[in-house]
Image (tube, rainbow, N blue to C red; front, side, top):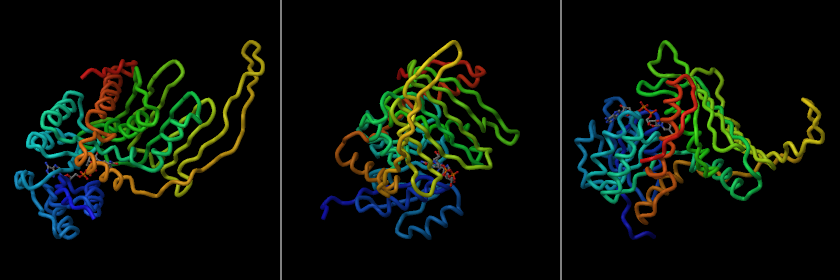
Length: 342
Ligand SMILES: NC(=O)c1ccc[n+]([C@@H]2O[C@H](COP(=O)([O-])OP(=O)(O)OC[C@H]3O[C@@H](n4cnc5c(N)ncnc54)[C@H](O)[C@@H]3O)[C@@H](O)[C@H]2O)c1
């Protein structure tokens, strides 16, 4: 039995995603959901009924910073910096929803504040804690895929038009984070084209190309206006290909031992390829909820002072890629060099 008292955690934002965080914090043996803050009276009523022991507040001003150890910020992206900064300045550890911020400048400000005040700053890149993405990373690291050739992701559905940002910051952030985590690689250039909708101030469809090296490139397609929900990632190597279908009810990960083996003959424009059509394997996934694993990681980072995998500092590279994509879209899709300088 642990003799350390549970961390006192406050949650700011009890909208769509906040309740998932609240449930996982409350279920953790190492943390207590001490308070829930939301501007909306109706959301506060729901929070109070779900978590009667938590203090329910209408603004962060009602929180006693000395009475909490950590906070989770689950409010819209444009409010992250303003809400998180005072907590970090007061020495409170912060788990912040993706994206960390909507610019490199704001993201760096939070990372530096965390460093100065010895706080853990972690970003909720939930996928990095999912069984499927952990499995993808293990498969890549085992060398089974061989040299990587191509990453392709489609993340589309009838989504909520975020009032404060585009589909790139809302959805493609997942793919960039997954891609970086699974491959350990950073793109050199990004090009993106986006499309708007008359009911949205920000782009609702985007198509991104990311060039890593001559041999490896990635495509990401995201949309809030697709009537069909697709969450499909394909990562191909010379030896094997992983397909992660997050909408599938089972066998979310499949590993194909298929591909192009060699060119048998090449004459002018005609090439005869030798294909390899091998087994398809669907590895068994562990069945742990990603957010549960993530809250455990947040707590253990605070206890051990070891940086979590999705730390604020690590997330800066993801922000740099998204910022480059936005710049490229504004320039009509021209390739933009990603600036990782802090
Ligand atoms: N990790 C994931 O997979 C995932 C999934 C969905 C959303 N998100 C992220 O979670 C964040 C919130 O998204 P959402 O879809 O839950 O939004 P939402 O609009 O449904 O909920 C946000 C809530 O925050 C409250 N709020 C806003 N400003 C506030 C403030 N200053 N103080 C207190 N409460 C405030 C609102 O009243 C609302 O209830 C976003 O950053 C989003 O990108 C992450």
